[in-house]
Length: 281
Image (tube, rainbow, N blue to C red):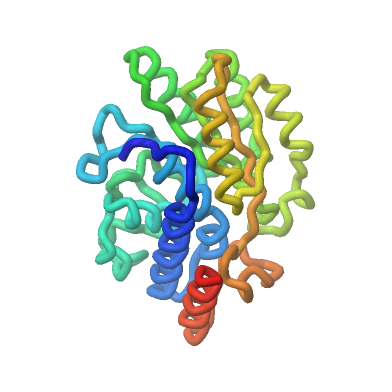
């Protein structure tokens, strides 16, 4: 798929809704999971896959593709949902989520899943892998780019900032980092655990072209991805996305602690209905 032109975002709204719905259907299979993260990052994934990136559904290893690196391995359910919407995976995979011998393990593993570029796990590693990949692409003369999704929790890891410094040093203008800034991690609010604010100023000081947007606003996201592509300086790009955990399902948004979410059996259909009702408004 080639990047879509700037314009009416209705199609992107439909893609984001489908991604959220796919994630909820997978969560229903297991009765739990990182559902709040999948709901919060769906808009970013819709713009990445259906506006910004080059890829081929029938050839996930196409050499000319843009790469999407999921540093946050536990967000795999969100990426699977996007890969299903993209046609790289099929809807039949939903019922296998998290099961034995499934192509969709609960944490992302590249060896298991078509379209999964790296194995995420220990947080803070993805950006370093992306730096290496971008160097390799440049040395091959490739025009492909790497989009690396990382979390605000990862910004507490020193390796993230070493990678950020390296990317600027090597002038990796083929690297787009995307920070999901939802202020939530396993032990509580990210800003209470180890605050990384002010984020915009920090990334800018490390030599990156930096933008900060509402990560649940498609128009802002499209403009930010377009600006990242068009920026003329040979520097890496970062888009800081302020997002809402559980976005699109009102009663999940309201939960105070929702890093790993257990949803009662009778709540899954309620969540799907709430999501669909919101899409109709």
